[in-house]
Amino acid sequence: MKVKSYYLTIIGSIVFFIGLWFYLEERNYANNSRSCMRNAPCLAETLQWLGISTLLTGISIIIISLLLKEK
Image (cartoon, helix red, strand yellow):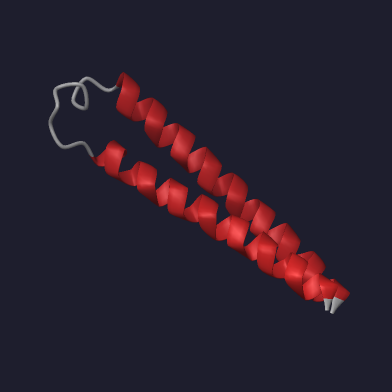
């Protein structure tokens, strides 16, 4: 069981960092894009939530792997 939890921790960490990177990229694009500054609907502002959800998925995978490691 230790090996599976080790792999889950690595996968969760990778997913966490991908979500963090995606969120930061979309936030920077939304802050610097002229089309997003006009108070119009902007895709980058919506895609930030995809980054946050990916980030939270990574955190949940890490928590699950830590729970499996204890058993």
